[in-house]
Image 1 (tube, rainbow, N blue to C red):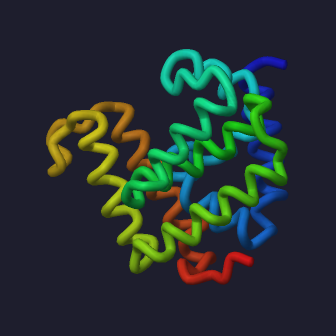
Image 2 (tube, rainbow, N blue to C red):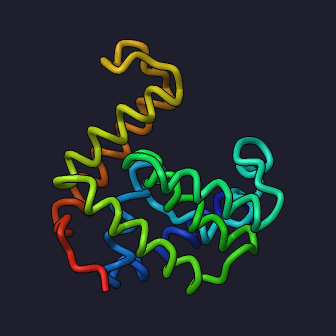
Length: 169
């Protein structure tokens, strides 16, 4: 399967998953990074990103990284959600295991943040720090501008129709 086919398939799967409240809320969290797919459904892409960036050789390494991230702010919690979904594509978790763990992290995000815009403020500040960019946006790279474009898309679609205080049972 070519990479573009993988992303098309993942986008269709996301559309179906978004009908489930918990998964739609999760999309509001990770969609600012992925835009229109869930890492769980992009095994080739997730494996590539894992090799180049995450460097998580096994489930224990993933668990350790997620544990560290879950002790942080909403930026780190958002990153934990992405890794927990990627864990499916990497073969470390089943889809059900991932969603169970994701639901706990989403509740922590709801506890830390006042709403979607507050989540974005914290995530944006954390992302710029992580990328060693000035927080005022004056040094934003093309990657960061793509992220901001994703935010615009998610804000118009998911955030508009998904309350931040959505019960996540």
